[in-house]
Length: 255
Image (cartoon, rainbow, N blue to C red; front, side, top):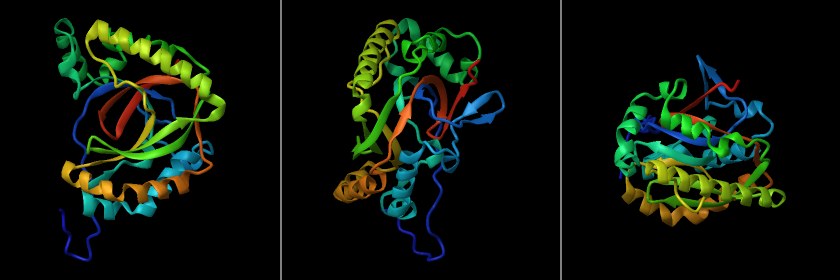
């Protein structure tokens, strides 16, 4: 366990490791312009639709992220980068799954991020043409359903579709599964099935401490649900994003 004995020190800021990849995210509102990119760095208080994200942020503040860092080496993600992943593509964690004929292309792609998003590339071009991205007007809404620790690594708020959008969500899940199979057949890499939409709240640096945190999970979940009751988030589109680490996501501006 990490122990801080000096009463003048509350905690440390996490330093995020390089983790490159391509992913399809539901589009948040209000991405920040960063040169030629739109960066996932949202001003939550300026956007009325972000009630669910603000509820999660309030819950994490109530849990005290400095305390969680000291006790469990839990590194909270900045709320401005909260997002919901629709489909995970090639990244540093799954590149070993690539079919032999595609491995070199994927290695080159990962080294070329973010450039691979803005110029011709077989892999990124294939993902950009996915029906998950081409489809518009989904209007899929989510509420917070549960809090879980995944693989003794991440604390995530699992989401469930709102009653009014369950049919649209079911159609989206079918389309995602078909796309996942197509990409796996062509390149060897696939996202997790079945689809479990979620917002990642942060990561544990030590799996042993994540296992200890399981004892507090029920209390944490109760608090998160209290702060997010009555909140929703709705998406109508998804886009291809590049990532350089767990807080740096960006996409090209749509024409």
